[in-house]
Length: 172
Image 1 (cartoon, rainbow, N blue to C red):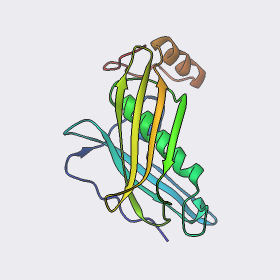
Image 2 (image 1 turned 90 degrees about the vertical axis):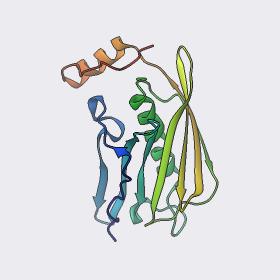
Image 3 (image 1 turned 30 degrees about the vertical axis):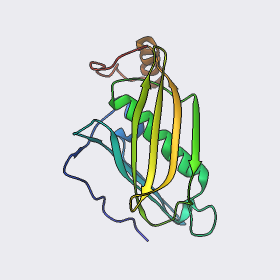
Image 4 (image 1 turned 180 degrees about the vertical axis):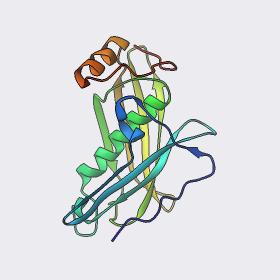
């Protein structure tokens, strides 16, 4: 079964992040056993939060009919990290807490929202919620250390890529 077309709300806009991290890339992977996951993130114009849609295919199963918790945790990590970057804070994950309120069903188009909750001098605290039909399925919270411009320059060298445009980012 193929995932449905992504339903984009009028106040959602695409974004790109340096190095194609997070949802600067659209992710949809298909394997021999079928589609795995389709996720696409956007920036909501009204408040700058990360929003998007996530669909878990058969290949992501954990309990029968439901997505594997590790795959769901991966999506929460991607959403929170991307939310920090679109808010202008380069960072990496240090600690993630994921509360599975209900099992996440396969083959359903879920909504995700993530935002920066706290900005500290050296780290950020982010929150995310994955929901279905306005019902929270998963809540995540993460601590993300802010990274320096020098570290971004190291990433560029390691990838053999030119330094991306870093205007608009606030470094540690």
